Amino acid sequence: MRGASAATGGQSELISLDAGELARRIHAREVSSVEVTRAHLERIEAVDGAGGGDGVHAFLHVDAEGALAAAEAVDRAVAEGGPVSPLAGVPVAVKDNMTTLDMPTTCGSAILDGWRPPYDATVVARLRAAGLVPLGKTNLDEFAMGSSTENSAFGTTRNPWDLARIPGGSGGGSSAAVAAGEAPLALGSDTGGSIRQPGAVTGTVGVKPTYGTVSRFGLVAFSSSLDQIGPCARSVLDAALLHEVIGGHDPRDQTSVDGPLPPVVEAALAGARGDLAGVRVGIVTEFSGEGYQPGVLAAFTDAVRVLGELGADVVEVACPSFSYALPAYYLIAPSEASSNLARFDAMRYGLRVGDDGSQSTDEVMSQTREKGFGAEVKRRIMIGTHALSAGSYDALYGKALKARTLIVRDFTAAFETCDVLVSPTTPTTAFPIGERTDDPLAMYLADLCTIPSNLAGNAALSVPCGLAADDQLPVGMQIMAPALADDRAYRVAAAYETARASASDAGPRIPELRALEGSR
Image (cartoon, rainbow, N blue to C red; front, top):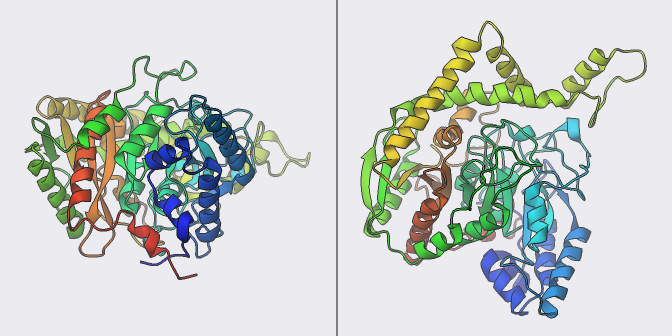
């Protein structure tokens, strides 16, 4: 494992603590939010580097001044004895496809380079209201289209476990920031696995909440029926605490569920007690076999054994329609993207090319899109436009919608007999940077296990389940729960996490921090 220099002394302790413990110390005035924030800013300075350099490159924009001002406000509130939220004073990173009033929002695209939105996304506003401290905006595949964070117009993010490997995508910036100790918490968005897959390959926790339970207002849309914002963290409880901050009904989001948020924090605390008696866990049989790395399957099998030892009743479950998920997704998502990205027309905001008074509106629009959109975005726009065309709609998009219905039915049938379903989060560990850039199909296969939950809209999370024996890189176990039953996934994940942490062979809590020492 290779990386960049680590912080030392007290700073090293602060960047390695879970968010819950940081909050406890801040609220007890054992340490100030300013000290915690400064430690993470220094960590970013030490290890993040510039795009394409030898650093992690998790961040596209860091707002040190704004972060320290927010931290000072929390410290004043704590000193005055005023009420503070459970995570007040804790730093957080935000994926750069969520609008922020005080920072650029680029979506990793040249077409939005430097664009500053006139409002905060609902989730960002809720972070601020709860006293969390936004550090900056994290890198992503352009418009969240990718599985490796190699498609950003502003450089590739690198995996803290091995800087020659990808950190997953599209939200590799958020997961890498958490893994590298640059932020204890982060927000990501998950359209086909873009929180869970990066979580798996960086050894962090990534959660896709039930569709509609976290507002999408201010999230720059990729695929509106699939996109969902969720938390990235180093522990299940931290993810639940952040989930509780950002979740809940939002009247500005027409797809927002008008109902109570599942009791995710309560479930994580209950799960940490380590008893899964009476919980029925289904292993999805379709997610194994050819194409799966042996080390991933071995780590997953061991994780399932632990669930059984905790009292869970483990059975195998067949979901045959899951085999349609990948092709269905890569028709539905590009179709919605081709519509959503039509707003980037050089007329209202963002990049404008060729507007010299001699060219038509169509010519300016064409030149702007040619220069502003990257290759993967153009590929998906073309796929989606073709799928929606009059001659292909029934044969392609219509059939994809039918396959989506079958996948929902498989989930419904499985959850009639099981409380949760489990699988590897990804078929392989993090692959080398550049290995799949010329093979889109191989790239898309990274999301093979995560896509069904986006198509169905149910809850799913990834929890670290050790290192693959064949390459010593992180592996994730995916836990899927019915819609509005996110608490089930949190309970099972927390129970497993606690059992693994207490095992003699569990390894260091955050091994990637040591992996970053001494090479710069």
